[in-house]
Length: 320
Image (tube, rainbow, N blue to C red; front, side):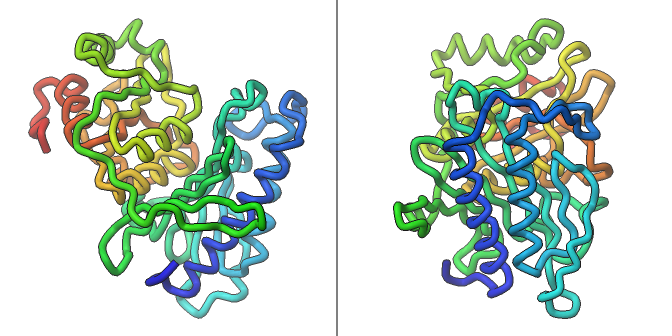
């Protein structure tokens, strides 16, 4: 890819190699066997969770440019040393190696998520400091979606596809999400049972005859909006339906992909007063590896509707 610093291009190459290896593993791997291990969040891991996690760490370590790496499967800040990084340079990377492992046995599309920060360390930073983020989609085709916030021609999100010869071909140089578009993917829908605002929002989508496109996998749902160029993806919380998405490993990297494509991202209010005002996911400080939040991603006008109904009476203009 043109206009990229050499070290960032090398790091993206490591992510691409990890993604190809993960794709090969998923193609023939056992989607049912559990590892017998729980991560520190208490989530029971599939054998594939463990293997894909190891692959990602291996490639990040081998590239020699990563100071700190942290995975949703092993949520610690692991020091990889960055032996090839110039003084004061190098990167820190967060990742979810297998997003959607709960649906992989059904042969639905699943994905990987990577966030890339300059320098050393992940805590106390924001998603807006990322120099790139990457979504890999493992489906009938294997594709990479890469956010490039510092591209010479302005922020953009590009798409690459894995070829038969194991190379990656650029198939879209600038994905764009239109301000409005009647496609919705309502995650954590059970929250409508005790979150009246979310129930009102879902009722609005149905009354306005939006098209439902929901797989149960965050990466393929976001990817659908990117490729169709319209729509909104939400994952809202309530007292009984807790937040699931972790800011560091999922929410912030996806927000960068979406905002670099001209879309918007937004927090969702929590049941105990969390996030009382709507702000971009990219502006949330990462105060803990385990920190979770509700989210909305989509066209600017679609996210404005989300703000209006989820934050009634907010001091922030719903059309901002």
